[in-house]
Image 1 (cartoon, protein in one colour):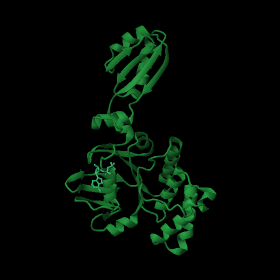
Image 2 (cartoon, protein in one colour):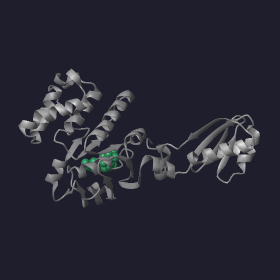
Image 3 (cartoon, helix red, strand yellow):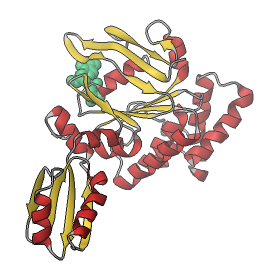
Image 4 (cartoon, helix red, strand yellow):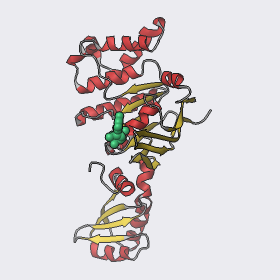
Length: 312
Ligand code: ADP
């Protein structure tokens, strides 16, 4: 069995003659949290809609949990849980009723249904609210219920389309820790789409940056950031002028700026250079007062590979 739970093969989708997804080859490792990051209209929803068999590809295919999405769509559907924006909850049902309905719909046998629901209740932690009608739920509670519902038939892959869209920052962070908790505690791969850079950075082991229907770069958030080679080291010492002159001549310094109070160095891999800089200061009898390392953000990675900001 492959180490990848999802493998796409030149998957392509046209809407009439508009190409929304173009020859995408993606490999998603088992039990990872994998993010498809891109601006609105990049083709994220179209891509995952094909992977969970809502749409069929125009060309190419994908293997999900060992099954071909075109030829074995029934088995794919049993392997996946889907949490999409448009799968609305019913306001007049309680949270528990939603879980019960979904369990029946997905053919979870009656004798295990109650245990499954109890497990999900523990995960989603909605307390007594679970027996209240959904119309009384906050946005964050609804999202948790939707995610819990998507898990009830024990899918191997959970698809989350923009899981925190429209939620405020504290609720968003709450959902992130909930998703991390899932990933750490159950045997599942999470594939999520997002246009929030912090979301991709905080949640995902690996990301694929998608633009105009094509993957432009893949990697872990930290590898992508390291790959930019634009760390900044900010230094202060009691002898700034002298330190500046010494550092100016070091081959690892790409650029040095001094504003009269702080020395800013642009370097490739800052973390590795810190001991060396401390050593250089010491042998020159200079005491460093403060030193800070700033790594680039995922935003800079995004700009580098697409040429523009994600929220253009
Ligand atoms: P994302 O999820 O990244 O915002 P989508 O996959 O929703 O992107 O859309 C990709 C492109 O395909 C967009 O330009 C969108 O307008 C277009 N599109 C999406 N769904 C349809 C559809 N049903 N018919 C025609 N065009 C569509």
